Length: 269
Ligand SMILES: [Zn+2]
Image 1 (cartoon, rainbow, N blue to C red):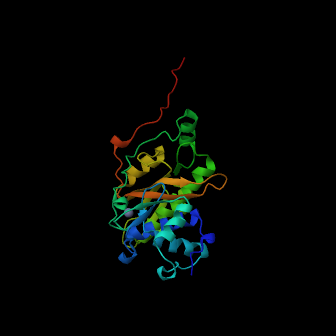
Image 2 (cartoon, protein in one colour):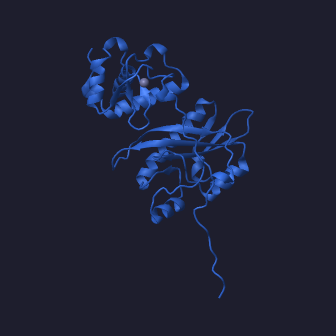
Image 3 (cartoon, protein in one colour):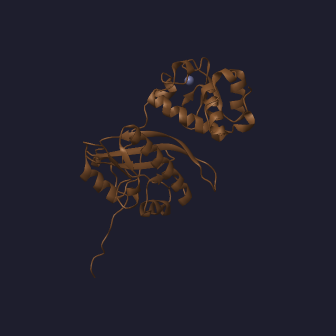
């Protein structure tokens, strides 16, 4: 069987990379699937992946089924050429694109929790602060873009805490100063603040209520940041990718907080 290139697009390859990234984080990929001479590079995170493994996954995603098994097509130049044609970079690399690849083990950026100008303009700042939801963040994002970023971050966060054994209720975020309520027999309830951003995620925006809640709930509170999210073109604004950082328990100290504005009461005349 040849590689069905007519069925595989850039979107499936990006989706396959995210799927494989989750496996790498959980160390569930067979070491035999590591590549020998080349890695395909994620365009925004710089992560390395074995080209043949990613392509087999992308074909599976295109069909809504199983990966195309390695016995059915050749890796090497045929795979690499097709991935390049879809705009991906193929780098010579001896580390295999899995756990031990230095491209995949660089420390993630620790978020110094503070307040960031999500937009350089004052109106952008006001919009971000006033917005009912600050979960989705990034410079110049409109409401649809923020929503797409928020949804991706929320689903990544829910998946993370489910894998860790928690029951996750995401419905609370509409009426509570946190985004996920996680429960588990014999453990105190855990509240999770979720932030998604198209930026590096070194800084995220918090509302006054979120700050107060995080302090009052410590240590049963966590912060989940999905940073470096890629946002597709309008009007779909498909959000993909991102790199997760989890602080659990999340201790919010004043050193990381910066006030964005003040409330001023005018003197009585
Ligand atoms: Zn590599």
